[in-house]
Image (cartoon, rainbow, N blue to C red; front, side):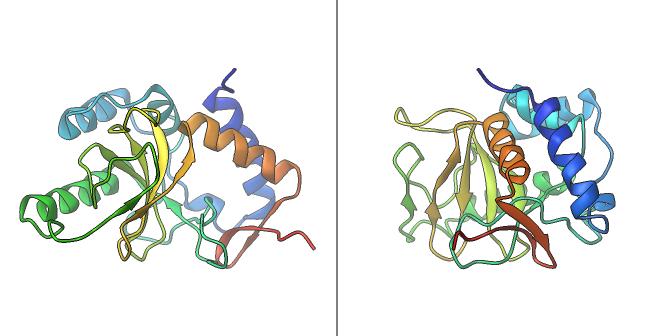
Length: 199
């Protein structure tokens, strides 16, 4: 049974208020259903229910200010966490990637996609969710292959074209993260959310 976004986000937000008191206020207030409808029309994709739910609770961080790195890096040894993108910023990232796809910039590049993820350098079915500020993203994958799950959370490396699956859905990802912080498996540092390595 999938835990509702409201519960997982509530648990995570409460933890962030206590453990990231400087960064938590960087998160913006929610967007409207109409704004989400406009974004879906722009992408040409029906946005997953859990994505819509999250953005009706918070709208990422200010694209013109500091970012709150609330999502830990998926790469071992990488200290830079990922900050949730404001909806308007996600649209700008997607537009930029679409221009690169249309101009053929990725045509000669060889991606490394996990089973279940389209073997593309960038796919227009990927909706940017979070960024590490260095060109890498977490995305909602609306173009999953038969081995994957539509709506799964994937990584995108702009240098290697590697794509990993982080969770089968945004709801599952947030619930896992909320469980992790409650169990003391994460800490919040100057680099954002970090896993605590087992000794």
